[in-house]
Image (tube, rainbow, N blue to C red; front, side):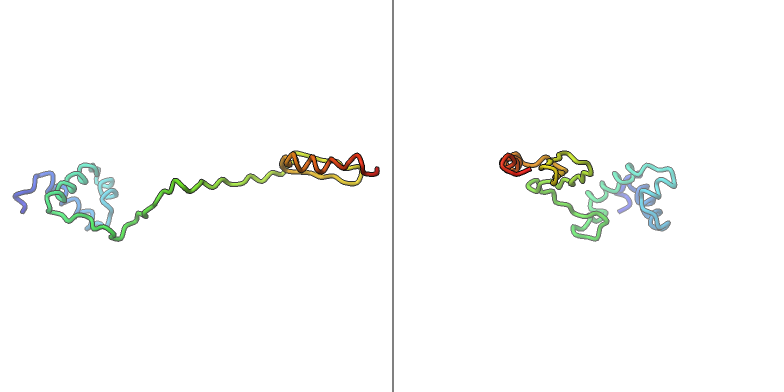
Length: 120
């Protein structure tokens, strides 16, 4: 089998084993030894295509988590808590309504409609 491998593929296999011996990920190993992780990954991918190395097993334990994006789910928007008063309604000299948001127009109309009839 070694006769079928290119020099670069043999080199990649040696470094793959070296990373395992040192207990490092291939990325960390190449950083320590000043190698190109991309060249090693490319050579290992060619070995997988040739059938020399096994392909990753679907469903095997991985550090990645599958995520499904659902466009029909509206994004959640955090509500903003306001501490400032936006609207103040004075009713005679005894009642004060303070609102953190503009109240609906229909509510204000109903509230103020009977004001003229009320006794001071």
